[in-house]
Length: 339
Image (cartoon, rainbow, N blue to C red):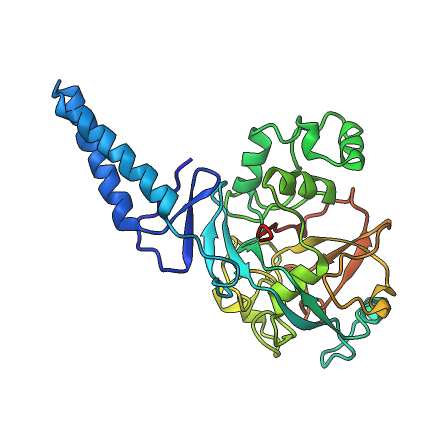
């Protein structure tokens, strides 16, 4: 599959050709396409030279694909972007460290949220040793529909044993429920954690761990909100908006790597099971969360959030992996292959 954008790419943008190769030289791409067009035209007119031009164009194409340099994880910068093989824009989160959780908050704490706040303690240093690509936006209706149309609900290999069992008990379900906005650029709501996991497998990725998600939102400065330390309801789809918005509608609220809607719009599933005392273990390197549990953590606030819930360290923990609601979505992480 070939993804082409009608603009000039910066040195730190990467564009996929096929499933593995990358193209970052737009001029060469145009040259090869011109050669191909001339070749086809020549062949159509019965000109033998057309075949020679076609072979030349194909040789140029293969040479460019094989020789086009790909940035290593060390060469990439925070916020570099790429378009993956499914046409999804992702941003680069380099390996690094930050302070995860919190010890105190400067905003009002709702009476119902005492347990949630305690679960964020203690604030502790976490190091992620591997850089990763994270979706710039929450998974949209259009992106998820591509998974559905590609047999996502019939391919058992994409599902965990528990997820497949849930699916088979769901009355022959053939796609996620649409219970909020159905426009293509709206975030996909009402997907269970199991569905999010199957979609991630289809993308050759995974649901981000809580640490991966929080680092992408807060960065090495451990910001309270993705956009800074002071709450600003104008920089996110939060209290008063009453409905989800098209992804990326609040660019002033993007995180340090350029990820949108990490404070508001939809809450997002993360990989981790809930253990409200898990942070007490002070796992400092690549935490994966508890091995077992009954409830999955959600992050990032939603369109009904207040200043407390919209914080990047907030941990929402009410929902089993089979739960679905109009305020829950997901974004996906894909790893850089280890050298």
